[in-house]
Length: 187
Image (cartoon, rainbow, N blue to C red):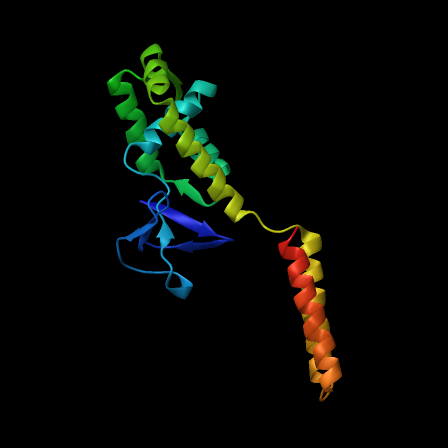
């Protein structure tokens, strides 16, 4: 099981949105607005992610969990109950090996794992591109933009609550907001 995050909120099991095919699957709890969470990895994808991370450097299971979360912009953190069985499977297949460091194991990719990763390079590249898109979706706007949005919201609330606006004042506000929206869309 995995947990999706959205700006600090976690969501339990729910409908999955398969990004590549644009279709909705599953059921259960949904987050606000009737939208379900997106499925981050298809079956076998996490193994390729792990192999790719191991191809960069030997890693502990915990490091793989944290790097995956980081590469997804905090949108997803695989559980140890998913990562460690995949590491064991990769070892059994001969794609990874480990050495004990006290209570921890340090995993590295083998020649067979490198060959397998090479044979599946396109799929691994697609997975990492999808991870990058998810991370970008999680990105918060620049703090200056958030401040400016709050200033605009406050100015509008103050002006609207100060009393009845004339038709001319209403037109000026609406025209200004519409022009600003168009300018932002064109950036």
